[in-house]
Length: 137
Image (cartoon, rainbow, N blue to C red):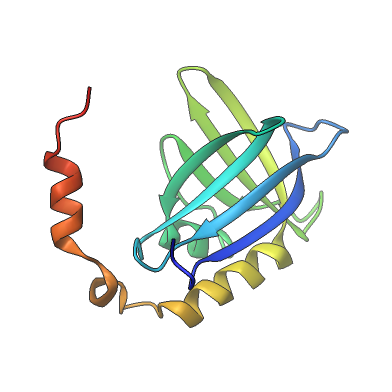
């Protein structure tokens, strides 16, 4: 467990739903290039997506990402205070609306742990290689 990890929970709206869903953003300095967003789908059950911290940082200002994860500020005509995270997989599609100021607070906290450009200093390459070469059932 990394005591330096950053966690932030908030309620978000999925694909225009009126009912908010509990979500959490997580950043662990020992995996310095990655953030995770998870959504509570049932008691004790979460669905988690991992993606680049740089993608989240860029998406706060302008549309970013191609493929499975895309992040952008909401359209100014709708709600300039929201950030839209679009998630796509073979199982489906979801657009998540998150308060932009909450995400900015989260990003700022990650940057105090590991500033941009210093991620490689925190990366344990031996552990990464071990994880990539370990055979799993």
